[in-house]
Image (cartoon, rainbow, N blue to C red; front, side, top):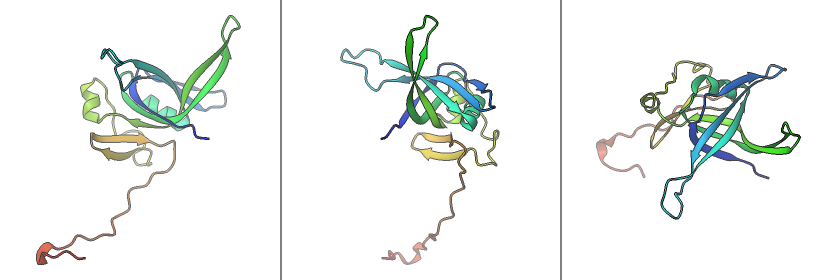
Length: 168
């Protein structure tokens, strides 16, 4: 069976970081995600508000670097939680259990939107933060505490264009 979800949107509130009785950190937050289509009438796009839970180092990372309005990318699994309300009615809540979180915008974009975060804080030397690149700019990510290493040096050498012939 496969249960994997990736969402990208803006935080609707600051992440709430709590600690369980056993000392495990857990952050909860909500992400506003626009739908890809506007509907038949061409009106405004619908927005879904998705609850997310991030445990341990991932939760601490979200709490430290993200705030209301920050663009975030969450990769994880969808899960349901059954509970009873005050009146004794059975309820079901759906939430994303985050495995990985990523910055959804560059630092310059975050600053122009009123948000800020620093790449120099929070364990860059400990490999908790890595850089990856896409067509729209640089993004950072936190990968659930798995060790990330720097890319290996290239085994290819640059060719001298002096003779004008291809090597194959």
